[in-house]
Image (tube, rainbow, N blue to C red):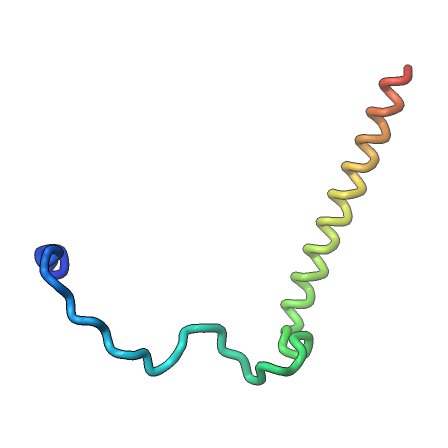
Amino acid sequence: MDRLRGQGTAVAPAGRLSREAGPVADSDNGPVAPRISSEGWWTIAAGAMVLLVASETTRLGARRAKHRRRA
């Protein structure tokens, strides 16, 4: 509330940050694959399967619609 009451007053500039915000990793230069857990790989694989099934369903649906148009 104090901050809202003093909106019209000048604010002193903040000091320098001691650390930058960002992702924390064990090694910034290493590959990402070893850091993904087993559960993470299963999640990635499940997502890929969902995309594959959705793509095939769309492809087959478009193919059927094309054949219906000709008839």
